[in-house]
Length: 405
Image 1 (cartoon, one colour):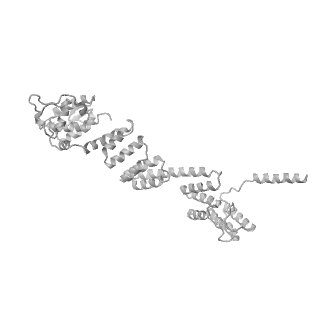
Image 2 (spheres, rainbow, N blue to C red; image 1 turned 180 degrees about the vertical axis):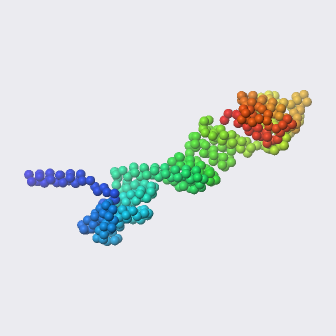
């Protein structure tokens, strides 16, 4: 009977102990096992408990007095002193606490204090790393979740800082910061996009090229890859990438037109370049510029091949045959003359442009002389006696803008 009562009494004691909550104050308990260093006496244990209670109450001086019962080199006393330093409001405490925790990799209270100090001092990334360490030391306390939350918070704050630097014109600093954070968050797309823009703004094209590669080829990814190609002067590639963008993508058409113009002149044949530099454009030069700006004419050149004796062997020969077969210009089939060197008049250009609009199946714009596009028409360049190559280039560039993107 007595043995039965003893068993019941033991069970009640165990149940009572199981329901007693662990100490949960603001600061960690240096006595939480496993405790490093030599074993402590009961007097020393009590002194540590009273020192931490004093820290919780803000009575730092009294807490330090109680620690006199422990040897200065004992890890428990050293941690308790750090706790009292935190309670006193000491600033820049993180390096001391972090160094102490590293000395004792399995001393849980040291890592708890490191987390508290790191978070308090705004060292979000360091606190996240400490929480990850605690998750391995004391599973089941939710430290892994805290680590993820802090890491996300850190990434968000860093991304905002990068965006602010970029907006302030500090592109080089923005890129350096973004690149540093990307080392820990390589899958964070929004940060990667910011890094590419910052690198381009800072003129660091080679680095932008490396950072942009992992981005998928959707809207923003395509646009940034096209911008990198633009910065490299690879205009054909930029055109191909801009064309892949959805038609409704903001700024697509304008960027595409700019890239097309650059690509056009990057590979322009000598005849077209000479035409652009001409003070007074000839019929043959007009043909070269038409083919350069409207390559679709080659597909529309379905008429018979004309026999013009005066275009044989000239640089613009192939271009002349293309525009004649497409119905934009004509020669004299009886005399077999095209008059390639004769200057083009404004009246002739107007007729060519109207035929061009028909060939390209464009409904507009209306043509006018000496007026601006803002009046609803496309102004023809030059005077009745002719116009320069630069005037014609500008006119064709504006006309090309009417072709759907």
